[in-house]
Length: 318
Image 1 (cartoon, rainbow, N blue to C red):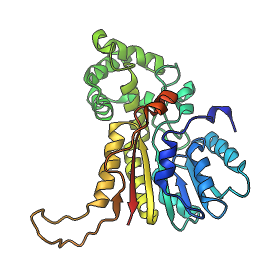
Image 2 (cartoon, helix red, strand yellow; image 1 turned 180 degrees about the vertical axis):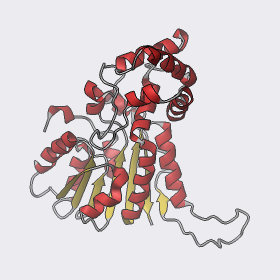
Image 3 (cartoon, rainbow, N blue to C red; image 1 turned 180 degrees about the horizontal axis):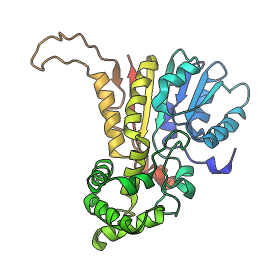
């Protein structure tokens, strides 16, 4: 396994407990990464079970395979490691001939490896090309293309919608003005523009001034919110009765989609609220296991600062 993929999984104990895995069951890690969560889940389903891991990154898949195949024979389940996007869950699980799933895990954070690799363009702290594609082989739109071609209104829209950035319109105006002098190609160029757009008094609070804009660009490049909706809907279809859907989100947009999706499957009745008896016949598909999200402890946050914004929600198939 490459050392780059040695990272600390977020809310590990909570994920394992809430997945409610038993020997010989099927577990799908929709965001495999370095298999931090899956390594422990594999021990729970055991040699009679199946572990499906999905990731867009070939390096992540290779690292995960090395870790999982190193497990002793008496604890290692059948492994199906698939390259792809969880938005294409139906095709991936059909290709692997998976009949049904007992637990899904979605850990929606961008991996530390992607953030910390300057050539991927995700980081506002390291200079690199404005790329931000999760899967460069399948995605053509880059952050540089957005920055250099979207008009002021569209830039304002995505920055505000995907990050709640207070200074979205001002940042968009500064970007459009700056590109009149030549294309904006690097993260360092964009960070300088954002810093110039946000007043100094506002830059002194709330973390790095470019954080929210970079988040918005990443979401736009990878259509992350649409992909999330498709992936969650597919997971509900594939769950066996009693199966669990466990999701860790890291910002309010993701958490809102998870919460709304869970509620839509748990409360399907479309009858008027004053009707004494349900007439639409739409029965609940999910039960909410967590009414409020589970949060990391202060101890975990101290050990792993990237867990700070994590929220875990769980639902169970009826």
